[in-house]
Image (cartoon, rainbow over the protein chains, first blue to last red):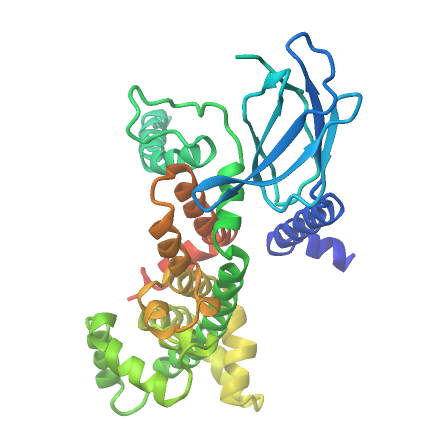
Length: 125
Length: 271
């Protein structure tokens, strides 16, 4: 009964709600901060490109610097692990297939696991 | 039959005035989630492509959590000291003693001296006490404020004298009278003390700038200045920082605004 009375007090329930929200957010961050960035690379016709080089660019104070690179698998997929940043860019290129635009990716927290919704599209020229 | 007065013109005026006063806050919030240039023309009322990423940028650009914790600790110490010391001083001023008029005059005259004028002796005293670059040293000058003492005095003056006399007859000490009788009857004055001391402590820039020596002891206003020094081109991030600094104060005020207004107006109608 007394607990119910206390919960009706705004000086109790407002901090309590804040605490629950912050605790929930931190739990979410703790379980989704492996720094895994994954996605796909396709050519101009939308077909998967194997062996393309994907670059991970990380924001460093004022500019983006290349942090890592990887090669796509047979189905055009790629995966980075250990991304440390919340503000990154991704780009891909392959000698005979062209290069993609550099795609900016904003994350809600550093090292957030992220799957690129749209594939990186290689264009010639 | 009494003619009922029309209230809608008053409400309309109040709504218009409120809108004018809230517009800058809205504009800061809108810019913080859209990053739009404040000089863009025509200005957009509705934010375009709102996102929370400027807040994320601020969080990682400086050690925000550390500055926030420092501000919270300093404010908590300040609030506690203000409630305890101001209640004691306010209670003392409700008593009759020789030289009371002089003490009141001294307090009122001290209010006219700006903090900037006493900042060097305050620094020297804090240094002699060995409290530079510490939480206690950061909160020391705001331990007691004269305005808040008078807020308590006004609230305590409103308590019937007979109640204090009855408490004395029951054998209560002066301390017990303050904590068990006066303070529960002066909740609005306490809320006013809490809010005012929190806001003054939270927004304090000059004293933390002087008294801190390491980045780990800096508070949010200093963090804002540091942030400005290397992120001055990002309006969105700057405004997001402002919102993050303002939010705790606004929340506290919204929670306790009823008691705050009561506390400020207590004694206003008393002769």
